[in-house]
Length: 70
Ligand code: FES
Image 1 (cartoon, helix red, strand yellow):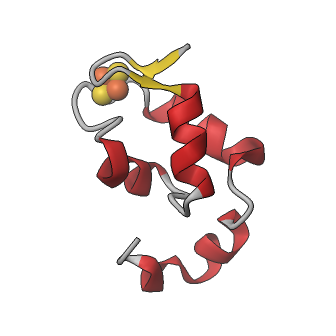
Image 2 (image 1 turned 180 degrees about the vertical axis):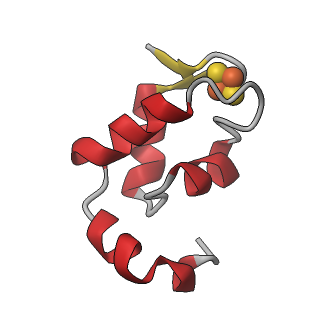
């Protein structure tokens, strides 16, 4: 199922990026552009990230500024 229809990004792809450390909608956007056009999918992406997609989310929330290279 598509999360971002502007760029054809699926829920699965968002989960994969999250698993690779893209733990915020902003990082998802830099990984695959999802959310950078109409923006209507950002909330959905936030929901996906907020559930179980990203094991490193807490660490990113605490000190995420240092992980820009990902
Ligand atoms: S649906 Fe994702 S930017 Fe438009």
